[in-house]
Image (tube, rainbow, N blue to C red):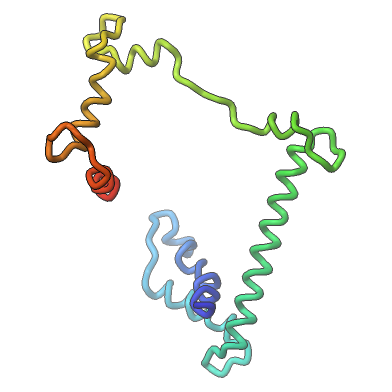
Length: 159
C-alpha cells in the first residue's frame, strides 16, 4: 500500500499533464505515460539498481508527505491571513462569520417561474406539489405508494 501510494503520487504528473503538443486536444499517448512512469520510478529508485526497496519506497512516501504537508500549511496560512482582517494573529467570531458563504436563495419571482406550469404568474397547490410528487413517483418503483429504504438506495446507485 505504501509503495503504491508513493508511486502513484510521484506518477500523478503522467496522468495530469500531457506534453504541450497534445495538451490542447486533451490527448495523452501510452508512450507519454510510460515515459512519465519511468521518470517517477527513477525518482523512487534512488540507488538506480532497477528495483524499489521498502527503504526507497518509505523515503519516497516521506518526501511526498512532506511536500503535501508543506503545500497544505502554505494554503492554511494564506487562508488564515485572509480571514484575520485586523492582523492580530487570531480570528474573532466576527472575522470567522465574515468568511462564511452568503446564504443565497432564489427570489420569489424565480420560485414562481419554476413552479408555475401554466405560466399564469400564480402557483396553485397542484403546481406546488407536482415536482416533488414526480420525484416520489420515480422513486416508488413498485408503485405501492411508499418509498422504501431499498428504493432510495437503488435510486442513489443509479445516479
